[in-house]
Amino acid sequence: MNKPTGMKVIDFHIHIGLKEHWHEWIHSYQEAAQSEYYERYEEMIDPDKFADYLRSHHIEKAVILAEICPITTGVVPNEYVLDFCTGREIFIPFCTINPFIVSHPAQELKKYINMGAKGIKLYPSYNHFYPNDSRVYPLYSVAEEHRLPVLVHTGSSVFKGSKIKYADPIHLDDVASDFPELTLLMAHGGRGLWYDKAFFLSRLHPNLYLEISGLPPKNLLHYFPDMEKNIDKFVYGSDWPGIKTIGSNIKAIMDLPLSKASVKKILYENAARILRI
Image (cartoon, rainbow, N blue to C red; front, side):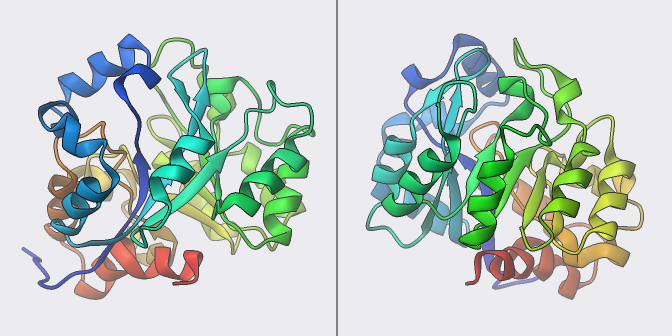
């Protein structure tokens, strides 16, 4: 059993927010996961205490996500995320743009980049648009120009109002082809329906990555049996607070029958390269 010591970690997928930001069915899901978010709520919503919590699990950097999905999960405003992250080097804020509720998505993205956003998260299945929709292309153009990564939800979701057809990774084939210098990550690795497709696409496009949040680490080699042949494309994320503890998934990754070098790439090195750390 592989248990590297002194392992550095970048968590590429952390949701923050107050209880009132999310719909009730989100709380039901997270409570079922026995998330520490509820046991230690006051600590989890305090930026400095949450940073200490992450560091206690050897996390050096954490991508913090905004969420503007009123018909499915709720609204965690960009401004809230940027304020939460301000002055704390451990946090890397990602904004989000819902193309249905802003008139000029590209201008909106530029505004948040100027405010400190270091990337963007898109929620196609939560907001009901295809990732290769022409109305989203200006966002990719801005992100490519500023050399910022774009994290895109792919695969299944259990939340009310989500529509899985929008989360098929195949739509990112267009995006990766049309924006070859843009760094794209498939959040959840095509979860449920499209593991093989996501894996193939990540090998086809140099700047398209598999981000594995929301996947039980113990099953990763079942989902991706040739994982080590493509290890430079796997990026760790926890999907906090949809898990019990931040540390549980990290340990499970370390317990996989992978080389120490591969574990380092998943937990830190691939993300560090993407984020230019």
